[in-house]
Length: 191
Image 1 (cartoon, rainbow, N blue to C red):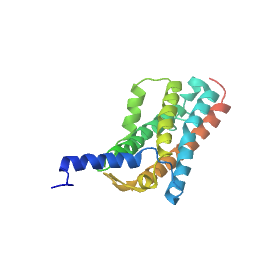
Image 2: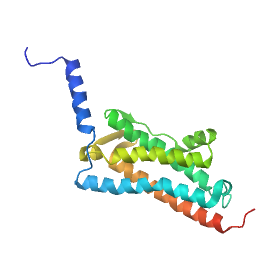
Image 3: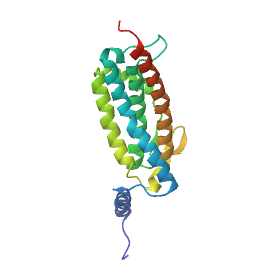
Image 4: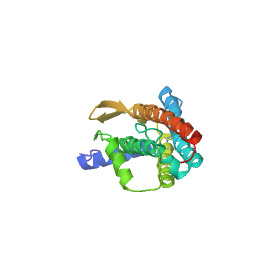
């Protein structure tokens, strides 16, 4: 039958068509993309705030808690990086395999693994900066469809826009915690 393709060939054509749609598309003027641009700008700035805190405090103070029940700036960084590893991976995964279910993962366990990697605070900040630069570069080039396409997770259906929004809210909460710790540690006398 002329003009018909085998199922394997049709899947191959579908894959290539999907890739063509996703490559190098700038964020459009759609409301979803404008909202995405706001999220991207906030996400782009987060790593620099950790870099500034480390620069202000130095390695020793960066690892110090202000109180026994408060996280140190280093612990805050690990937590934010762990969350970033999980959520950013979901975004990359859904763009490469939109039919997959993205599993919920425990960011505290990821944080424990990051601690076991035994990187200096400076190396952790640098790793966060580079990973985030990649994510931000990708997000800036998503189409409106990609921002709003359903992402299936084991906790329900969301979109990349929602994931980015949740990530932004989470980081802003911890950046407030970081600022408070830096203020407290910066005014404390060295011990």
